[in-house]
Length: 439
Image 1 (cartoon, rainbow, N blue to C red):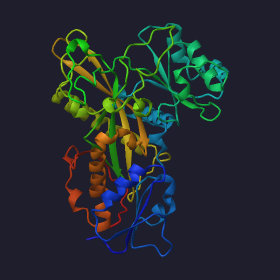
Image 2 (image 1 turned 90 degrees about the vertical axis):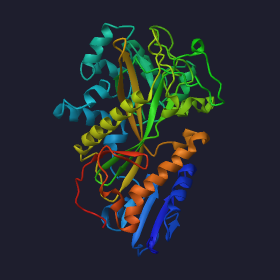
Image 3 (image 1 turned 120 degrees about the vertical axis):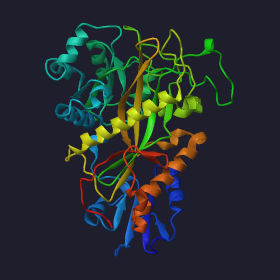
Image 4 (image 1 turned 135 degrees about the vertical axis):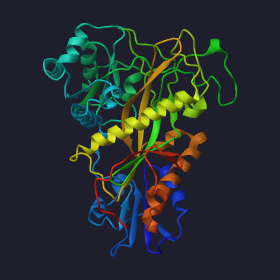
């Protein structure tokens, strides 16, 4: 039973759904008091801070590891900032060229730009290799620009020439008066000067999310249109450091069929950006469980349109688990920017893109690419239909991360091996880099 003096700080002022899910999960623990602000000294014998990052007292997390458990690591920029993540992975690959990250991360350039005219200097320095490629353009090769610290698709742009990239930064400078559908994703380079440029994956796995609609209607094969999607995977990291991948992955589809951009023509972002926050006005048809689309036709293989089967999904999920393990190993090697603590845990939303290159008449190669890692993910964009998976996820977090702290025993997880699935979570990595315990 829970200690009567155990207290849980629950505070999510900007995320009411998360607040509700946390409270539901804690209802399974007896004799725990839930409060909305840090209690005055003396502290309870055990204090759980399951709250938004800004509402957690991080000094308590660091100073009293045996009595305090918090739902966020204090320092984790190596993971959640795109430019830091790019540098982290590049440094790791220099020492571990055999890592799966070598083929799971698109080629990336990390730059700082405050004004468009600064690009002139970058072409002879950080962007020298990219500049050479753009000087010999290919209609099949595109690049994607991402602000290092923005989210929900803000500031993301596609380009395939130096001139187009220059115009993008002019737009961000406020020099462009053009009105188009991308204005809702504008950013200001004076506020966000860190960017990454990645080689755009032009061969995504394409499916039709409405092959079988939510109402049960079934399209004929002639009616199917290939849509790009990415996989949103919820990842729970505990202590210092164990990584779990929640197995109920979401497939988030673009609302428009995919087609490769045409050089010289305006680029609509809608077929290319699958962020739920940009598609939410178009209903829940574009948010599916990955398992729900097993059996859908693979429309990126235009010659035959085979179907995605359970073995394909299992292979993709196994690749994701391997990539996650390597990414966190890379972050651990950057102790300035990722400092896991034994008395903390955190939920991340990790986005993957699956590329598809048919290479012979009988076999298919699916390659998982990691896109980004999000702290405090916008879980409300999952939609009402699939809220049940979030309830299940938060109960799993309570069981795996919180209950051992409150009860003073981790018997339930001691024998959990890497690769094993419990509570719909697959353990991907288990590296105990600190010896301090709260027991």
